[in-house]
Image (tube, rainbow, N blue to C red; front, side):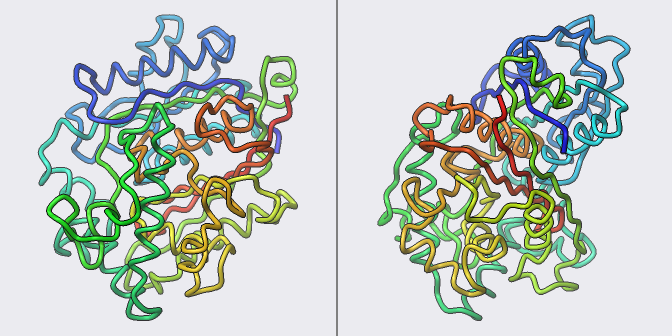
Length: 388
């Protein structure tokens, strides 16, 4: 591949009072260009990742990026959406523009404002990322979907509540050192494992600590070709970028396997000529702790049905065999839908440059990223490496 990240920006995730969708977009667009050391006139194309689905009354948002600077006027801008993988879909669109030589420099922005609508509407908006014909009436919305997945996994492989609590505790502990994280609190294993008034069951065997947060936030990356990148102050190259789309209805798949995730990782390793053992860390899509557990198996870190062993042995801790979600993941960092995939790329690039602060993985050289939309429907894998 011949595309590099040369600059980025990231807001804090959370309930951001005084911010709007537009202000978040403008902020990261401006800061990413400044960080890359380029001007608005150098941007050939803009891609905005924004899910919306009812979170914002403004539903034609691509041109909001132009609000960052009048000099962006007349630059092609397109909004991309692919459920919870919207951010990575936007990144991939930018890569394809560069590798087809339709653009030399692309500004990719991911943003979402989710907390301005009431909780029941959040559920209604998110459930639209499922197969409405069959899945719209599952209680508790998307949490109910993953509660059903967790219950099915437990039925097939035994009660894995200990492992889910380990994953939740790990990610919350990692998130403490992430200044961008929505939740910067170490709850500890016992709190995550125990049902309580503060940690009730939400859906099936999933408790509140098993569920990612409803958040506002934005992130941006500047992409360019490798020759241009080598003349800049930093360059993180895509060793791989793969997209696999699976059936939308859960009824058409074995939902406990995340086969689209597995296929995306296999394609990424094949195209990059790398293996899982080469990676320094992984940022993976832990919208719910059961998702991270199954993703261990789909990426090849564990055999089918043995993901719990990986969690319980601490293999994915920051000092383990393969650190997973050193940022705190969606579990602690938050999950503003359109921003999530872009955020994963930003924080992974920061790790490789050695600028990740308290969440830094020592001597990180290769980053793996998995971002998914729906229940393993849209599956995106990137592998990143610093070359400058």
